[in-house]
Amino acid sequence: MIIKTLIAISRVLVGGLFIFSGLIKVNDPVGTSIKMQEYFDVFATDISPIFEPLKEISLAIAVFLVVFEVALGVMLLVGWRLKRAVYLLLAMILFFTFLTFYSAYFNKVTDCGCFGDAIKLTPWESFYKDIVLLVMIVFLLVFKEKLPNKRSAFGKWVTMGTLALSLVLAIYAIRNLPFIDFRAFKEGVNIHQAMQPSGELQYSYLMEKDGENHAFDQYPTDDSYTFLEMTLKNPEVLPRISDFAVWNEAGDHTEEILQGKKLLILSSNIEKIGLSVKELDRISALINSFQGTGVSVLLIAASSEEEMKNYLEKKGLRIGYYMADATVVKTIIRSNPGLVFIEEGTILKKYHYRNTPTPEIANNIFSK
Image 1 (cartoon, rainbow, N blue to C red):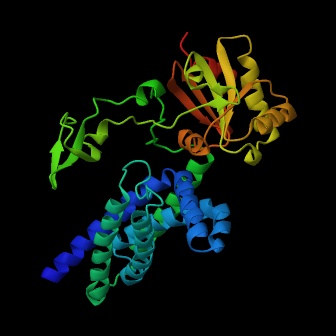
Image 2: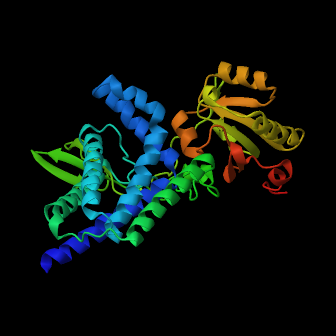
Image 3: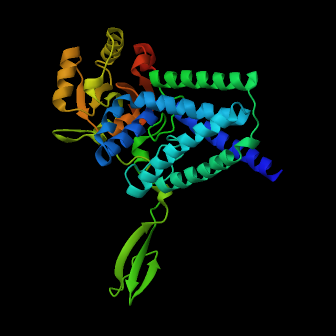
C-alpha cells in the first residue's frame, strides 16, 4: 500500500512538473533555442567541435524537446504506456541533469532555462531540482512492475492530442510571438524605471580581525579590520534591466532612444533577415506613414554600421540606425526583425514582422 501511494505521488509530481515546464517552454520555443545555442557554444569549446553544427538546428531540437516533455508528462498522468514513459523520462532527466550540473559546476551557462523566463533558478537550484526528479523517476523504474499497464484508447488519444496541440502551439509561437511575455522587456514596462533598483541596496561586509571573521551591515571605520568580501542582502531589488544600451561610432545613444515616440526595428542579425516582398512592403508603408510626424523610426541591430547602411540602401529604406547587443535584442523580441513601439521609454506594443500593423493601427498606438 505504501509503495502504491509513493508511486502515485511520484507520477503526479513528475508528470505535473514536466507538463508545467514543457508548457512554459512551448510558449517560447525561440527562447529555448537560444538557450540551447548557449550550451552548444560552450560544449563546442570545452568538449568537442561536433557541437558547433547543432547551433544551426537548435530551434528544431528545442521544439522536439519541449513538445516531448509535455507529452511524457501527460503519459505519466493518464497512465498510457507507463513503462515506456518512465524509460524515456529517465533519458530526458539524465540529459537535463548533465546540463544543469555542467552549468553549476563550471559556471558556464548561468541560467538553465528550465522554466523559460517565467521562473529563474540558479544553476545549483536547477541541478538539485533535477536530482529530486531523477530520484523519483528511478523509484518508478525500480517498481515498474507495479505500475498500471494501461493501453486504453482514452490515454492514447489524450497523449496524441497533447502532442499535436503542443506542436501547433510551439509553431504558432515561433511564427508570431510568445503567448505570454515573461521577460523584463514586456509590453507596459518603462525601460528607464526598470533600469533602476526598486529599493535601497543593502550590503553586508565580512571583515577579519585577529584571526576572527566579523559581519557588519555598515562598513567599519576601524582600520584594524581587513576586508574579506561584500554581499548584497536584498538582490530582489536589483534592476530588472541592466544591459540595455544603444550606440554607434559617435558614442552612446541610450538616453536619446528612450525619449519621445519611437518605432524601433530590431534585428539580432542583419544577414539573417529573410523578409518576403510583401512583408518588406508592409514595413516600408509603416515607415513612410511616420515621415514628417513626431515619431522617429530607427533600425537597431547587432550588426556593424556598414552592414546596416548597406542593407537599408539595398531595400530603399531611409531611417537612422544604431548598434546593440545581440542577446539584448533577442531578449526584447523573438523576431528578426521585430517591431517595438516605445514612448518616453515605455514599451507600448511589440510585433513579429509577420504581423506588421497597418499605418492606421500603428498611429493609434501612440498617445495623441
